[in-house]
Length: 390
Image (cartoon, rainbow, N blue to C red; front, side, top):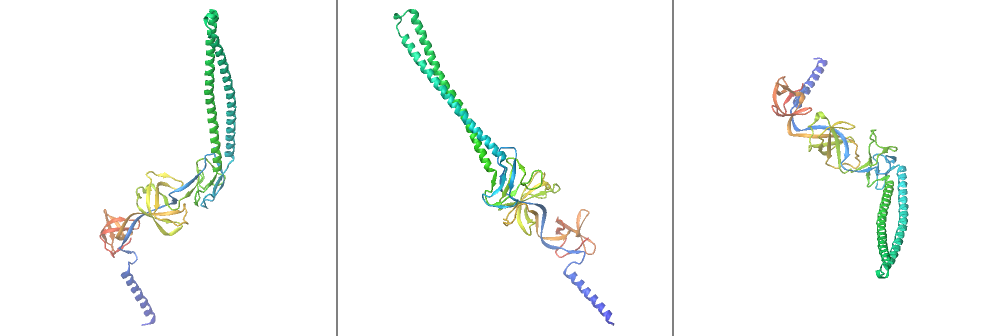
């Protein structure tokens, strides 16, 4: 035999041997082995990492409809206690403080003037009372002369004069008492006005000082987003009193907020275990749990659907920051030590599941569950069986 045919025969022998090994060790092309392993029914969500708790930094209640941001720390900056986070425009607050201080001064002037006026009126009332007492004393002496020593007409005149003098005396006493009560009421009203103006001025002064927002504790500063524009707040923006300007998240307790599409309603339930994989660290999965699934779908700036809160059960590294994108793997069911077959090896015929045999036939099988790429078999196949793929 010539050398060329021998070489060709040698190649054929090697190819047949390789085919024999592939058949003995694993499935050939177009086939699959029925294997036994643990399978999870996993539903995937995407969301954003957030802190469960945070300290809010809000715009103080100051004079004016709006407050402008003069300076603002960078989003995500680390700060220490007492460090400035934001400075707000003080122009309107300073003007309001001056107006309130002027009201305090004016109220004090009015109070002083009223006290002087009332003191003069009270002195006059006391003088009138003293004069009425003197006149009443004289009238009593004149009226005390016996009738026998005077004419009848004169005696009656003295008696009438006494009654008139006593009436004037009583009138003077009542006038003094009434003026005292009225004076106290007027003074109390002006004092209340002055004290309220003083409190308003003190509050305005405190609000003016609060326009410099400082960090209450060490941590990160996460700026709030602009209401009309999809961006963090920045210098020059106008805010209303009471609005949140920034927050300092508690990094020891984190969660992922995701959105479940309306078509997938009911596929995720509260209490289901989950795993969270951060985009910044794809090599690690953190244990988590589905904490809440909203009962009503809502529209957000990023998605429409049911809001899902997934709480992380372990503490993250100190370098992890809120706002990172995350993938959530919700484990709906776990099949331990289950027979698994690829979905392309199964077909639904006449209401029954069947597996494709290597020779072209079909075998009836009973399926426990079908996942995205494979199915869990209850009966009809055994570990190591070969099935044909479509």
